[in-house]
Image (cartoon, rainbow, N blue to C red; front, top):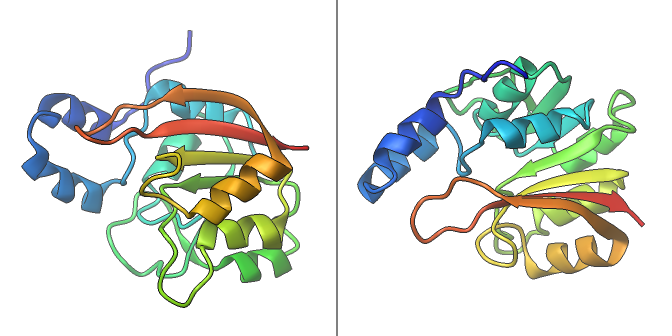
Length: 180
């Protein structure tokens, strides 16, 4: 049996899940989604990984604890705090980098489309065409875009899905997709 991961966000969530006023502070310091040990181990099975929109690098920090290889990119890597190194990068720059082919794409709570821009998550699928995509977020609600969800469903098949710990009113899941 694997050793438990050091996962302070999950431990804090267990104590504060009925205190929604704490949620915003924890999101800023950790992540929008709450990782469980099981979720991290499932992701680690798909190493090497490339996470775009990595934010604080919290999920990557846990994934490294599970023994997996991960590279993190974000369009604004200078925003603190950082749990794991996060490099500057976008879907377009990642597609040009020869060290990224054949990596599993990890998207944790990808942002909704911003006014006048393509959805970052959809851009990742189009630019990188990854064989495997791991998506963490709310299906069809607060993450990515309807176009992303439609593209994912039409070009990939769902291999695995399970619920994650959630703040009240949220329904995050982890979904593993493989290219059709």
